[in-house]
Image (tube, rainbow over all chains, first blue to last red; front, side):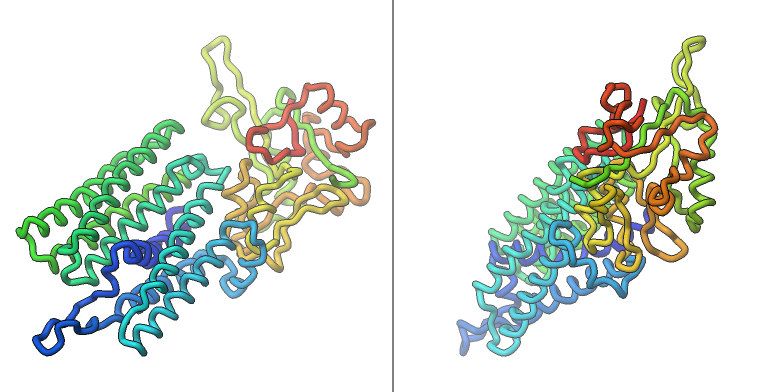
Length: 268
Length: 188
């Protein structure tokens, strides 16, 4: 049964990375300032690779959507999956397509104009939040699976995606964690994610399901290690570039562990 | 509101847990692979066929489960492809397997876990209340096969039907009514 949900883990993780990154970037603005070149002749130089952020997000979203196809018993009929607007699965498809279109526009503008257009990122961030919420709602509405129909389900996906996004922004921006707003966002998302893990664990305990081991591992490897890495960068103990890798990697591991626990608990 | 509203009352005090309904449904409807449209769970315990309580006050009772053909079916509301649909003439909920994308979401949102994946053809399948038999005035296979006569089938909109009388008397109660799906299967 866990293998049955593996494609969903792929979708929620990869699409969540992309959506979370857009949401965090629209607030913190790191994605557009990737690798600025600072030279004496060009003190206000343009970003070196403004296309990298939307390109990475587009690839991640594409990989995630491929994951959903692997979940379907009839993948060639995937277009049918958008027929009922009242279904959260169809809503996920609508929001994913809208998000993908904004990312494509962002990528095109960044490629041809050489800079990212801020309002496009804001629109992308808003749609990304919508995608994260409907993803959580799709699981929340599973009346037949008590582990998923609890109040912690939507925050588990929303906050988890934001934590993933903060990690991806830190990875893509070499000096990202030197930016106080991204560092603060990363720690805030980590703290909120840890609180959500506690709420989800309590919900599971209430219905007689135990996933404590995975949730504790998720909390330690994700929010705790990532926050320590952010603090180390801010204190000058760890280079920002390495810190970005550490934050992204451990946040990814933490969120994936939480989602493995989520899917396993639902299908126990 | 549908013209007819077919429903069922299952008497758990008569059910002996023999699973003849499960087998009869599986064979007669040629339900393929590991899919099943009927299944059984313990009425008040965790483990099927394990009694509950303390001797000498023990009980061994069962709740047969099938599609509840709800008035407000979660599977129909949440099916992304529209394959799940409710027949307004009979109230029977069915799946159009030519449209189904086999995402499995209907089985997650159904409080009764009724839709069952056909792992041979890779489409969702579910209880049809034996719609073709019912259209000919014959009761569903599970009702006809039950050796304990634990199942009563009929039109809940017909004031003279046995199911309607059992429901109106208050003897038969819906299972998980708090889910808000307004099921058409009731239990005594």
